[in-house]
Image (cartoon, rainbow, N blue to C red; front, side, top):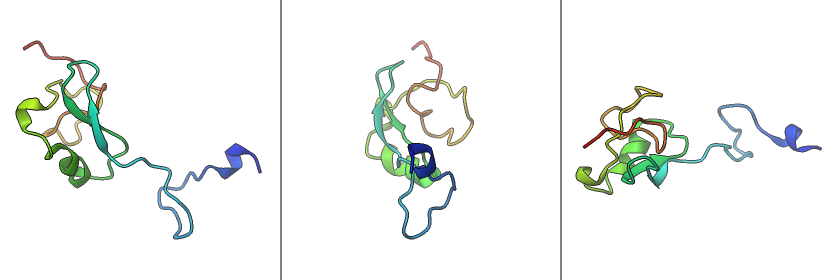
Length: 85
């Protein structure tokens, strides 16, 4: 079996398969050098659980440009537009 045949393309893995998504984790935004998140957040709660480990003054303050998901939190690391302070 080659690599392409091994990749699971379904959103919901069966109980015997591992998920191909990476859960949301802490990241440093490469644009503003503040705390953000990365990975494949399945919902707002996942982003919230990562970001609530840090005070909001340390959060990335880049503008959302790729997605309007979870606007109460910083955009996924590296996907925003740096805002001048």
